[in-house]
Length: 320
Image 1 (cartoon, rainbow, N blue to C red):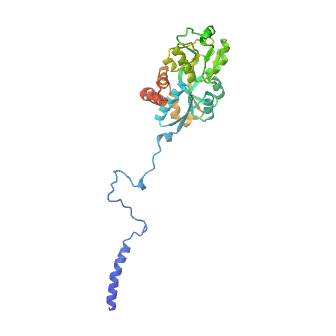
Image 2: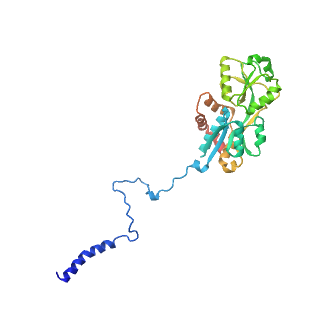
Image 3: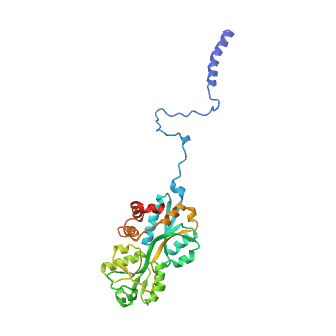
């Protein structure tokens, strides 16, 4: 084979190789092309992984968490769960904690909780108010005709605390109370009992649930019983009861149920604070929710949610 034929053969072999090298993407020679399999159909409007935006933070997380604290009293339980339902509708997360009265005030005063709906003022929680008034804020008045008293069934034929000693035997010399440390218990022991000469009566410390159990048993048997009580409370919807007259006002007159918040809550969560400031309930409205929880056995959150959903005309007045 002569030199001309050898050169021609080499040219034929080399030129295709050079053409292949010249068609490559010199800007990213090692990056493979991304292809969609022929049998894959992407939904309209979808994006590739590189184009996907971060998930939007839920509204509740943006607005934060409101921590409500309350005592396991029927009115406080109903109020708190109603507040929770409305705050959730506004986009807040809500945490709840059940404590006794003293720790409830302390937690809000120290900023460990945001608010509570059950400050009975000016009388029942007077000692707590005097201790913590510089560390808390009053947001508003939830209920304006609250009352404390010694309560008896209506079939009991007395109408005043002054008559108790005349019927000591029928009552078994017993006054059935609730939790020690409650303002009602403190004022009954320190004011009512000595004022009306009831020192030799057995003043029983228990709980709201235990008091209700005693009252239930007595009413079923038509027995005479006297308990520490307050209104608003569902027991007045279930039974025919009366608050004994207290001519010396040892348990105070009409009171307000006020909503108390920690210092700075209005600035931190103005929308939540505004709603709580405007929250108002009547005896029948609050009694409806308490009755569903304590008589019908409905879950507190479910009862509150049902009431909120069915009373949007009232609720909208709180959030406007």
